[in-house]
Image (cartoon, rainbow, N blue to C red; front, side, top):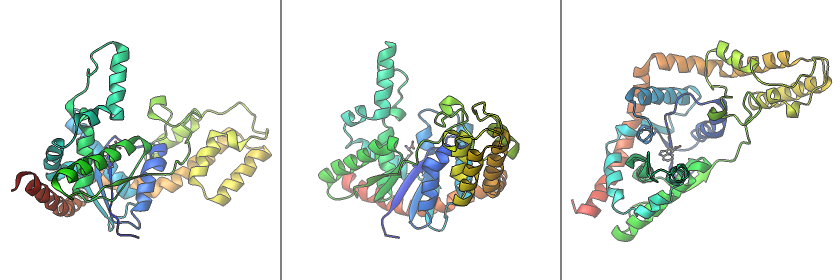
Length: 331
Ligand code: TRP
């Protein structure tokens, strides 16, 4: 463990599927085992797209309960809700004034909207609210508020961390050394995780397996995995089988070798292979699922966890805002 400050935010977007979990959330949980980490549910970042308080609140509980149930180390992690820290609104407003508008014009997600609008022949800013446009400033405030050194994110968020670095640089140039320059750390690509139809697992293909769901639902999903039409007797190629690819993500090496053999030998139908897969995932996720359900039935407990984190986060955040206020306003 080194003394670098690691920070990351997770947007509250409902139950993740196993592809999301393995690609994005599991690495964060592993990192929490041996790093001091600030981690928050980025509910303010959901606001530009979700105009429904109930939904944001519910999704916040879901993702918080899920992270705890999957083993987030709460000893090492300051785990909180972004909107609980009033200083975030303050720092965002302060940073607005050193952030060039042109930088925002270059943000990938804004540019994608402009392109879409241009193609559709409508106003380039159609459907763009200021929350979307200034999303990178809020994210820079998240990162700079807590003195972060390292920000582990997916590829799609790398530009945002670079913007935070740029904004810190602009500020430091004008007002003197104030913010550390954060570094994005992009997780290793864990490869494409196939969905039920063999294509990449993705919400937009409707081929996902939710990470935590009742076992009857899990079974139903797994039974829907598309296979070729080989008979039970025929030998099968495990490397071309979605069932086997997903099994590999949950089973240990010996189990994987054993199932590989059964594929190659023939004599196992896809129905049986699916049952083996279901039983494996179900047993690995049974305990976390129970803990998740327990927490979801006791939201007061989730609130208490997040409030404890917020108390800790506020101490760091209020110092930073005091520093910035002094530099910018002399107060
Ligand atoms: N924008 C990130 C996402 O969509 C979530 C996020 C918000 C974040 N604030 C952050 C990530 C600060 C890292 C650091 O996934």
